[in-house]
Amino acid sequence: MTVLLSERSQIFDRADPHAVSDYVNQHVGSHCIRLPPKGRPQASISHRTFSSLDLCRIRYGAPVRVTSTALETIYHLQILLQGHCRSTSRGQEQVLGPGEVLLINPDDPVDLTYSADCEKFIIKLPVRLLENACLEQHWTLPQQGIRFVAARHDLTEMGGFLPLLGLICHEAENAAESEVQALYERIVANKLLALLTNNVLRVVPRPDERGGFEPVRQFIEEHLTEDISVKQLMAVARVGERSLYTLFERQVGLSPRDYMRQRKLERVHAVLQLAKARSVTEVALDYGFLHLGRFSESYRKRFGELPSQTWRRQR
Image: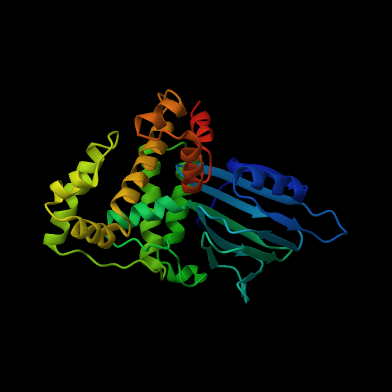
């Protein structure tokens, strides 16, 4: 039997649903709940973080409606363990039962109604995790972002995914090393991209195309702390400006400057997670972010939190 978070991860048991909701707002994602006016339901929640993933197991103990604006920087994957859930999104309504999976895209508003006996397991995945998985496969990253076409899925059709989640929960509860956590989160991202219908173009570039981009990508990685110009990239790729933009559009779905900015942000994010990171300001300046206000806002949109929050967590 697959165990998705044991009692070791329990935060609340037989608690006030509003206390559980407050915890979710602080640690998982912003939302609002509506409960019946009468009764004293008993709610429970178990929670673990695992690299950039959040793992939750929640029961409210009463019929509850959960609403939220679009999540923007994260995907929510919900597995119904028992009970039922009614999902309403963009005028479409569907009812899910035990063993069914709901995937909520970052730009989808949330409107879910759970039965009194409902228990669900939630995985929160940051946008950049799936984008990086896409880029590692050399697939074309959609300009509008990765979107999963169908919201509803059957767990039995996602072969091996449930045992994978059980293994991840076990590793989370046993303090797996950061390298192991990073490996597992990449496997989850690749599994979702492979198993669920989405808008990613799985076009493997021809050898001559890949050869033109790989030296450029490597050059950028080696000089992220520098102010790289488009002319430098043209020289490395040995192409003209128009061909360079076409190459980036085909390979990563971004302009050269947008791609470099994205990689700089991701490198800053990685550095801030290290205990030896000096300060947010110094790291940001190292990577060429001179306007700290704009940098903080771009960082928040990308990772769902301010750089200072990432830095403090490692302290």
